[in-house]
Image (cartoon, rainbow, N blue to C red; front, side, top):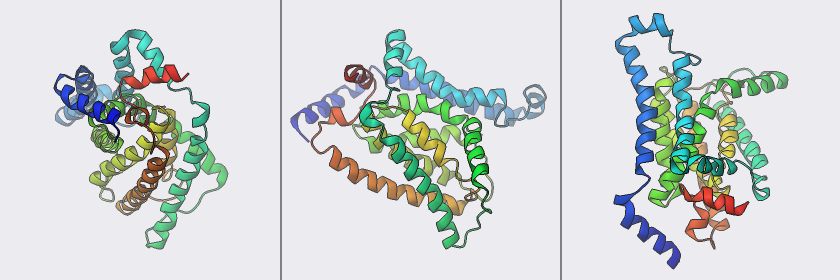
Length: 298
């Protein structure tokens, strides 16, 4: 760590108690968790009265859609609170991929496709039941349909990876700690809206989000927090079971998490090499500094 990095870390520790952005974190957690968990608890307590009015809490129930999209709404609103619509405009400019970042799209597509196929092959190797393969045309149609059905992808990316991850990277000066915490908070938020049975594990589901978030954080650190790269990663990662490559069970959750650990290790060494000569403020986008740096880069 060079002297500039040490100054940044020292300033962070000294100012942690007077963090001017903590109010944004409190707003984000209160609104998103308050609505999601409040809705669930109300339906548990008053199901016989609320169900006839609002319907079952299925994936496309209007209340569920609101809850799933709130993180992105609040995340974008935070940038307005931070610096008006100018702050929001500068944040949205980070969605424009730089030429040097374009290569990440094919890399993500190839790696995550291998990831999904590997889950099927390892399931077969260890005697875990897998579905019968469907035709390539059916797989393509289901893949495109999954973008529409996985409403949580768009609903969470601006909040969790556009705000929360860079905020936590500011607090902890580590994409690994920030990624693990982002994944844990996101898993807890999504838990009430996820379908679980005797064949799946909530703990493994949250762990999967933690591992995936760490892996994504490496890419976002290299692309000035452009959340489009998260969107592509999540879209492919969550399509495996929909494409009939494997069943979503505890066994496949274990395989998924094991593969994510391997991806994490590979990314660690790749980025350690790529960033060995970069100061901390260049290799770690933090809230809200990275939107100013993004404008300068353009």
